[in-house]
Length: 259
Image (cartoon, rainbow, N blue to C red; front, top):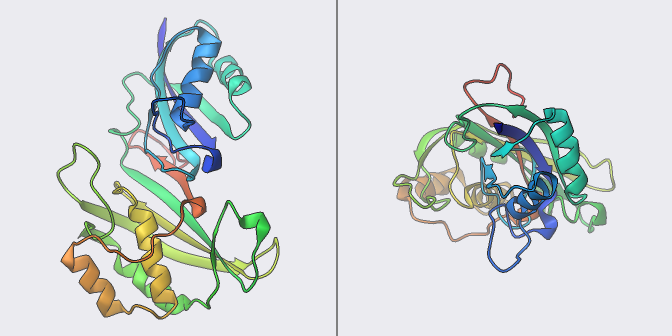
């Protein structure tokens, strides 16, 4: 019997060229999951993701869907697929949901971006955070992040995906938090942002710009000009290793768990 499976997926994106399958044996998250499902079921499947994360970007709350003929329990399917996946990719849960589409049914996505502010390199955070050498201004970064909340044309921060005609998005959360680095020296900064959808490279460009504000290289007026002008900002783009897709939310969910 054909079962429409919805699952939450976590992965370390360091070794992969993004989520979306590519030709020529290029390692991707989608390709690895499809291979694992085929190994378990003997069926060729297409795995659809809620978001196409870029090369080096991670996820703790990516949501995927695929349809497969399966006569056993879904917990058995989860265990079998995870046994075929590499150590840096794993299903976190799985359920049956007829007609589910992880991208088109989503009402919001949440990302977190991590920085480490420190005078020395932090090797344990090399694949998890962007190293900032200068001192960051918490008040300026917080105010700039809050300014981005609401409906805006974010053409200055990213490109619309193929098939989309608008660069307008609604940010419902945009805020910074920070604390001492428990793994070494310096301070950990975490940016949390949630929106109905994101443009390509949008979060990384926003983080790059907010860091410029925190370093005193841009002010609030310049931020408004960049947003109003709707021309792609050519300043520093935050590197991918600090970015994690943490949750995708749906109207059918009873709680904001991201799955």
